[in-house]
Image (cartoon, rainbow, N blue to C red):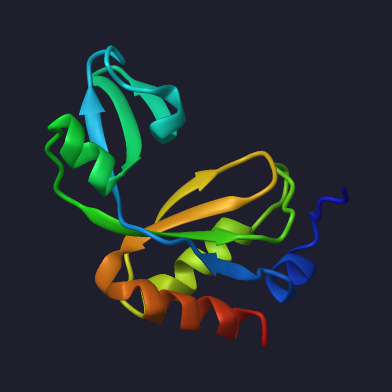
Length: 131
């Protein structure tokens, strides 16, 4: 599997995919009672551990949250060493007043945008492939 580092090639091949469902960020102090398979992503901070969960699962587990997001995956195989990709798409989304929370996976970037902005974000990302 070939990963890309060239910014122009990355932008041309973004291939954004809108994943089904709604997602939330929750803060926990431990992972007791949480099935690891239900965790989309996690990051440990001084204040606790942030989890990204499907909204339905978070509700089922009784978690509170403030932000409900749509999850967009950039299916282009981008290198973790690629320079400028996050800046390019986040700047373009910001120009359209779209907040974006980014999680980098080994091969793909995952964007969490407000559910009300999901289609608008997809349109903006598709437009980047045309530039």
